[in-house]
Length: 177
Image (tube, rainbow, N blue to C red):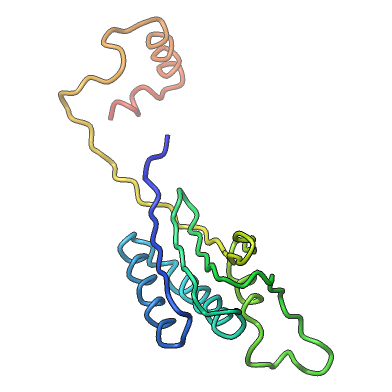
């Protein structure tokens, strides 16, 4: 049984710098509304990296769709574009590129997410996605009413046997307090 329905948000945009900031704010607002404040920094960093990749590399256009979905305990963020080329994680080479200021977007995604990947989207596009572990949702503890009856209303053989074991171990008085 699913105790909480999935939550879903989608934004279609042109991946230009001014829109990237707006999408970051939209993702932050949704996560706050879903009470997932702990995921905001990682989710907005990841969506920024993916949208920046679309802005820099996607052909023939910069049109893309951002999808954010919370299903049970997993937040999945994906960016779908119209470029079928599959990106790869850049590795620093021996020439000192480990200090490069760009080209590390997917390496950042890999480091900060639980999982990530790329899947084709039709013949002319792809979606790059990552997941984050959602913190457990607080469970409201409902106090039992003094007049409510739970379980059996008579002492059966199991209740009598359990009471006897607890009495022998000296635990019955402890539970009664």
